[in-house]
Length: 263
Image (cartoon, rainbow, N blue to C red; front, side):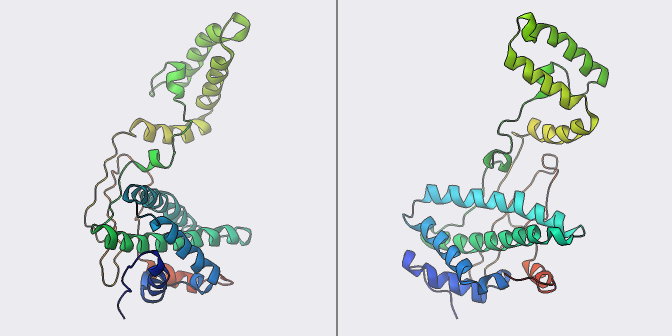
């Protein structure tokens, strides 16, 4: 049975039903839930209601980066550890999100191609798009020390600047507060290690390069349309590089084997 033709948003329900029934990468017990199917269809209807390509591009792009840079890596971390009974609910909530986002991308990508006669391709640095660095403060700059500094350098820099910025000495209260925050983090080795991981990415945030390419391990393939999403991830930039878009048939088998898995 062929995919129903796109004839405006009124045809989205049929298209959605076809994908959930015939696309093996979307097979899941989740879709037995009427509410889940309805939510997916409603999301697609709202997305394509006005057929404004720019807005649709932005929405799919954010979803793509959430899926490949956040949801899938988190799921991968869960799958590599033993899940305790009290964590089961959180795990299955994440699993549900991954399945739902995959369906959103698969179907919206196909409809996008029907409307605009071109395949959607992702763009932009996901860290910036998803607001990963919103509110991030460069503590090394606050203390005026290099990344290669020693513990003694950190302590010395803090004492020197504290004499200038301390409110009791006529300094700026907010600036001193930030200085103390920088010192508290960088003088604690555990906190510093965590901070330095993000700092390394922050420093290279503009080195990110993304472009669509054909990669077997990084694509969605519809049975009849071959809709693809490809990305090239710079390993030097992202420490969390994931084998994104892994075989969802494997994921399905994993779900089937879980006990008490009720969607």
